[in-house]
Image (cartoon, rainbow, N blue to C red; front, side, top):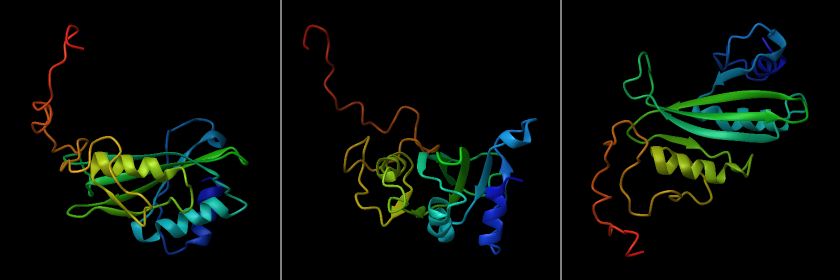
Amino acid sequence: MTPIIDLLKQQFANIDFKPAPLLDMQDKDAEQWCVQVSPEKLIEVMTFLRRDERCMFEQLSDLAGVDYLNFPNAKDRYGIIYSLLSISHGHRLWVKVFVNDPNPEVPSVVGIWHGATWMEREVWDMFGVRFSDHPDLRRILTWEGFEAHPLRKDYPLRGRGERENYEVISRDSA
């Protein structure tokens, strides 16, 4: 187990982080870890990871959504994955949060990492997972008024008719 996982267990003894190595590697010092956090504890845990001198995860490298619909053994519909990087200490950590329909919602981490603004907007737009307390949660890839979320697994592969309303542009008419 890495020192970061040990610190999390000490600081939050009541949370089962379900730590797991991201990859099964032979070099135990190089292992990178993934932990799970409930939406209710997300801000508290992320604030600790960002501000504690022993962790110092200064950078949110990535924030992604996953739809686990019909995924074997999946208990939850959506996963939000935060990829954290400590430039000071040179370590990484992945934090996963799981939510479900009908109203999937996760607290926004924009107050901890301002760079999460656009990443959270993308996950909202594509998966329909809301980020509570987000300063500007609006669509970023589709348009306002678009009623679906295209990266959900139940979204039709050919869309819902949004492509039929556009003028076909050829080389001659462009």
